[in-house]
Image 1: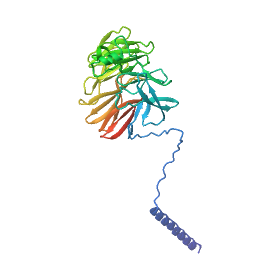
Image 2 (image 1 turned 30 degrees about the vertical axis):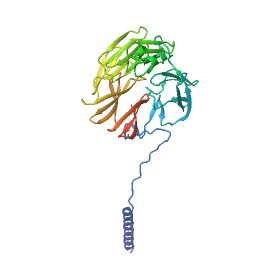
Image 3 (image 1 turned 90 degrees about the vertical axis):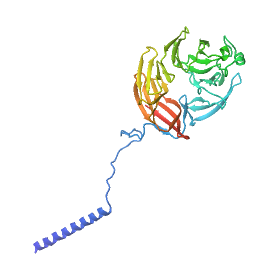
Image 4 (image 1 turned 135 degrees about the vertical axis):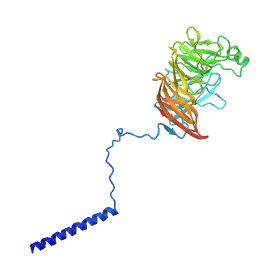
Amino acid sequence: MNKLKNIKLNIALMIIVLCVATILSSCKKSNPVTASPPITETTSEQPSTTAIIEESDYIKLDMLIQYQNGIQVLPVIYDVTSVNLKASDGYEIRLDLLLVEGIKYPTYFPRQNETLDSPLIPIPETDSLKYLLCNHHKIYLIDLSVPSIDMLLTEADEDTTYAKSLEHNQANGLYWGTKPILSDDGHYLLYLTNRRNNGKTNDIRLYDFNTKEDILLAKDSYYTDAYISDTTVFYTCKDMLMRIEISSKAKAAVSYSISSNGSFSYPYYIYTTTYYQKYEILNLLTLNVEKGSLGTENSALKILSTKTNRSNTAAFLLLDKQKITLSFVDIQHNKLIKTFVLSDSFRLVYTQWKDNNTLLVSGYEGDTNEKTYLLSY
């Protein structure tokens, strides 16, 4: 009897197990179970240690951005005040002052009838208080500590006066001072003028901020680019690189085989030997030349900008089989640092160094699409 009871109990248990299994199986089919994501602990104040996959090597923005002296001026993102200044010769300007970390930075945009060689040029070692402004025929000094603006160069020198030169000038216009270039320490200002000889020729002059001397360095001379060291002025004119000793005014050629498509990054001058991909790096002190190339044989190579601070770096724009790239090159070691591929329809308008390691490149993709690239290395 007991044996029969045990058999019945085992059969009942088996039926229960089968029913439970059937129910679980049907639940699993109707409600599939998905695996839970792994739990990761993150702390908002700490950087992630997980490797981040970058979608692009640069920041690309749908707008034109412009920097002046490391401060973003277009579009304006800081508090802005304005000041109107008037020079003794009647020239008037309005400056927008951007307040950044307690310091006021001036910005200036030319009027339609003016041609500026550059935006405001900060004079080194003046605590961001003194700037130069060139309105194509005169150079003005802006002093924000006053604030004031006035002509930097007097209207008379050993050869002529401003009024006399203006009256008898036979050129297209009088350039009392133009193409200003400052030395890195703010000691010297190099500039061009055609005020002597009734505007028939150009002269290179050097202004000493310490002694207020205005020195005629070279008559009947011109420069496309220049660099001022402690003792020497280096400048390019067409396919020649020249040097002038400041103390003796002795002029001599450094090299005759350069290209005007070049840039100074002291103590180097880097330039392209042809329109295509080859470039050369000339050491101005040793006259040693290093050669290099980028792209293919038919690449169009252009040096955009160079930088001396902290490292000698050059930025190259390269058109290679309809592909536009921008490369950074270590000039000192003649070594490629990094290359970025830009849009094949990009049309460059201007470039500016945002900081020591970031180049800002602005322009258009197509006809009207504004684009700005921030390229860092």
